[in-house]
Length: 388
Ligand SMILES: Cc1ncc(COP(=O)(O)O)c(C=O)c1O
Image (cartoon, rainbow, N blue to C red; front, side, top):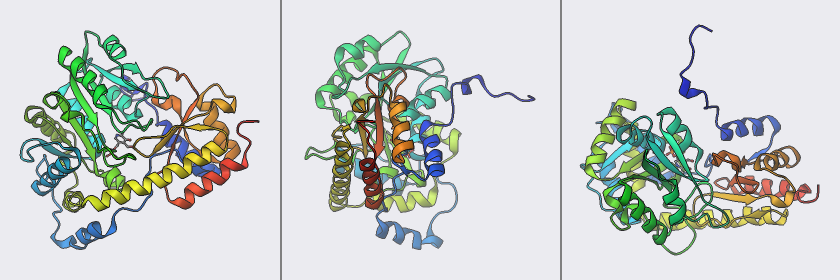
């Protein structure tokens, strides 16, 4: 070999999610694995924006994003999450929430710093930490409740801990953090002066009456919290790679500089069109939630009818299914049986843990057209999952 790769790449591979998508294609399986979001975006405001092609900006925007985008984002944060941020100084447009996370970690932490991850966690958190030479510090949340407790959080803090990453509503468990859990987070973060990164990309997708509870609105968490948002989930346009980070001016100022160094700016024409989507009113979100609620129930019934134990997610668009009744030891085995015998692709629970999960979980995405979900349910019914 002439040129080697960096040592930090050693633990990194193609994500399990991407690998499952490839296998689904090869086998002709229904892919419930990747959160690919194949529901249609709200066509009219986006199409109206795209028709203005000649008038859209096609050059770089300023690194923090177009004013029209930041203003629309701040307005939406206020309406949907009760968060008050100044669009001039406290918002930055990013290349998806992933870009927001990378810019935040790069701007606010140093190599070797410890970052608390609540297991099970969205797998990109771990790879982002690895790419930046940050150190993951897992806190195990135990199902079926997956609740943050004061003892387990306190026990995880070490001398090197500088930050923690929250995700509410959660991928993969669908849980929404309660005010009591966030109060625990606030107390521990205060005591140890920790940065809190709150990934709220599923803020608009939840299934009970209570509105989204943004971490930064609880106690004095707003002083130390960077909130990550994405247009990908709320408007079903993940491929646009458009999101934003918001938080205290001092932190966002540094994140803007890091975002500039990493990628210059978020896509300018999509910021312009995205600003229109951010302006959509309550009816849009009501319909979005009703659609996902229907899909969630349909797929959960399909897994339950096949003898498995899906959770009841409070938000996001995933089921976290306990496959113990298949008689398998791991989520990886369960996912293999579902793929090979039923032609249904799911993500093994292990993808969301550093250690071994206590049960054989798989995650199934329901952000898919009804006919795809119907096909998955038919295939689940055709196997003998709990008796074979
Ligand atoms: C919890 C969570 N955060 C962030 C992302 C990525 O968001 P984006 O596509 O805006 O980078 C995802 C995508 O699945 C996610 O589930």
